[in-house]
Amino acid sequence: MAHILIVDDERSICELLEIIFRKDGHRVETAVSGEAAKRRLETQVFDIIVSDINMRDMSGVELLRFSREVSTEAVFILITGVPTISTAIDAVNFGADRYVIKGDKLVDELRVAVQKISESIELKKETGILRRELRRLTGLDHIIGTSSKMRQIFELIETIAPQSSRVLITGESGTGKELVARAIHENSARSKKPFITINCGAFPETLLESELFGYVKGAFTGANENRRGLFSAADGGTLFMDEIGNMSLTMQVKLYRVLQEGKVRPVGSTEEDDVDVRVIAATNKDFEKEIAEGRFREDLYYRLSVIPIHLPPLRERREDIPLLARTFLERYRKEMSKDIEGIEPKALERLEAYEWPGNVRELENTIERAVALETGRRISVEGVPERIARYYQEKRDTPASSAKEMLIPEGGIDLEKQISDIERRYLLAALECAGGVRVRAADLLKMTYRSFRHYAKKHGV
Ligand SMILES: Nc1ncnc2c1ncn2[C@@H]1O[C@H](COP(=O)(O)OP(=O)(O)OP(=O)(O)O)[C@@H](O)[C@H]1O
Ligand SMILES: [Mg+2]
Image (cartoon, rainbow, N blue to C red; front, side, top):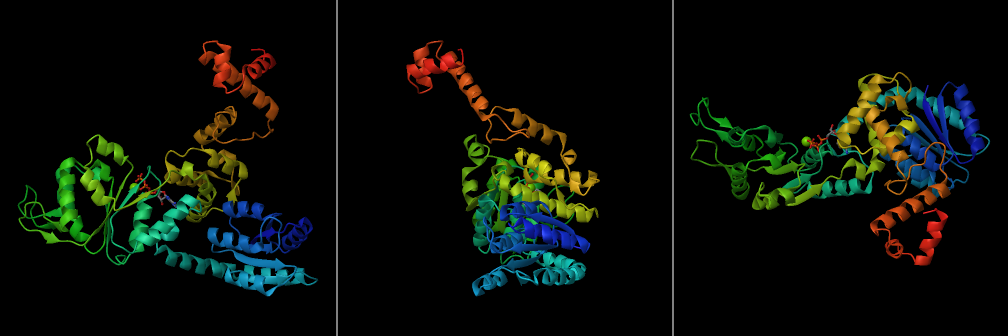
């Protein structure tokens, strides 16, 4: 039994195939446009996708390409009315698994194909796990995102990873800084050497020094033997210095010297060791402010930020939310062995509207919790935490004039009434600003006094 998505902008074909596959015992869903199909692929997991090639809003090949971006596992069958060599080539190039021609035999051919596929699904699932495991090693496919902002970051990572230049990653908490640091390491020539992480904010100054540079026996009480520091341990590899913004000024001077000279001196030692380490630093602080206020040395900042990467907060790339949510859903439903196959559109709408102060980490925790609590087949609105649902509600109730995005409530809105409402409130506000002087209020609203009078009369102001 397979979970099948049928995509065709001819509703009758969708319905026909739905009936037939249902009879054969499969779970079937349909989409009557490419966009509708994309939406489903973002939030649900399918075993088989059957798509028409010529649709009004999008070609089946484009949908195929998209489906390959969001999921590598689904089997994709393209159907076409007019077979041409070029579409066949496209289909193959973009990894369609089958190609079926519309005609008398369409239904039979599809049934046979689907039957065979669903028999091999178990097997495919297993190889899928292997393949993912393999891709995991490159690190990049860990970082989910199709927004243009994230695409730029992927490109940047790919370009700069092979070199050894230092990287400074900035971004709010939970935006994926550590993930990016790992991906850079995995895609560099150093990937076989260690990737070591240190949270610079977690250590008091003296401890951080011996942690980073090591110490020699007798350097301080308790130093009973020589110990290598993390710089030496990471030799040939990458040292990820997290929360670098919390480092004390004295340590900053010491770190500066190490970066400048490529040598570390263990605490209590008179000798220096050569080290070859790529430093990737990260912070969720605003460096300009830290420097301006004297908490961070400008010279060290320039040493560290040879290549700056800024990870945008999730609320600035909301289009990544469905795919991230779906990825986490897949992860946790497997982990918890739960038979959940998607997220209800209403629940997703709330997730998409939220501000996500804790960014991707918060979204991940939210989905994990929802998967754990869900008893049905899909994450429902009830699975959305109270704060997120409340935020959605408040945003929806905010007058359109101040809402960043326009959200239409379930019952629809009366646009004329809304606009009239806004007019009236701006009128009153302008009058207030102008101290009741109407000519001046008209000026503030960039209208003639005549128009102002007209509006004032209309609203009884
Ligand atoms: N683009 C992404 N795709 C998939 N998972 C992500 C993405 N961004 C972040 N995550 C996940 O979110 C969590 C937080 O990411 P990470 O630890 O890299 O954030 P961070 O920026 O280092 O946060 P902090 O500043 O709090 O240390 C991790 O579980 C990570 O796997
Ligand atoms: Mg981190």
